Image 1 (cartoon, rainbow, N blue to C red):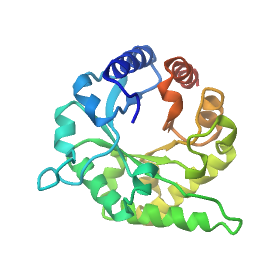
Image 2: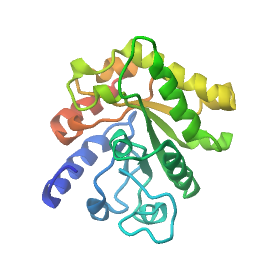
Image 3: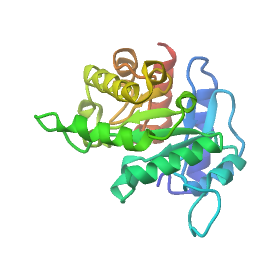
Length: 242
């Protein structure tokens, strides 16, 4: 729920779009809260896209307060975050995330599907938690649909802190490989290589380069650091230099 005012949202969007629009090797996706989406309707460019933080799982019906994929598309939204950890904490299940994912793909939008464990146990039980999320969320898709989605790995215990609390690049790479293996077991090795894998969890300017070069991921899902345009611009430039 940031920023808290329309005036701040306009400034933040404008500065971020300006910074991202100058970079040739990076795609920037800006996902403001629902009330601000109309301010930036169809404001995306080839390098800077408009995204939404959530979506409903169908285009019509009795669902007061919800926002459909069709509505988002009409505003020029290209990307939609699905199953963010904060939505899951409010009760969103794997099954509901799967329904939202399919609705987003049907509308021709690109989903950013979030998965991640709450905590780590010495016995490695978190691998089972992650596998269950992947299987429940992606079952029922067609192989070509994996070409049109991003999988964002966000270990919940690392979110909202500082760079020192983020997973080390080696650990991120391990999880990226694990995600691909589970998808490969479901759909085959070629399909597992199609989705872009992102990392989110205390990503800042100080660890952007190391995560992207050593972490085995294609991009980042940035939280608090994206609200500071100076810091976020440094992150974008760091990514662009790789």
